[in-house]
Length: 80
Image 1: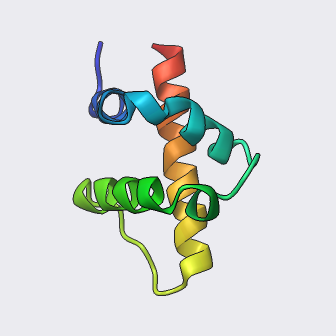
Image 2 (image 1 turned 90 degrees about the vertical axis):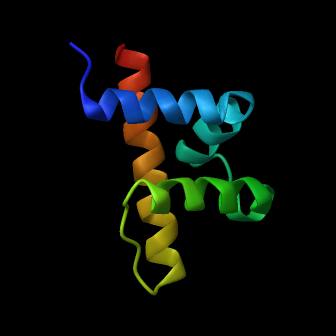
């Protein structure tokens, strides 16, 4: 059974397939995505905003929200 969450996760892995290792490393806390690759950070941020994720006015909170979304989607992809 494929759920909406798994479809979204698969679309993350498809849309950013060349950057999956970078996203995984950032999600694991190896580096800050917005510092190491600001262009990718902006693209992923826009992707999640388009998916309906609500961000706050605080940049630090927004980063945490974004990383949490990436972690959830990468875990879903690995389970499938």
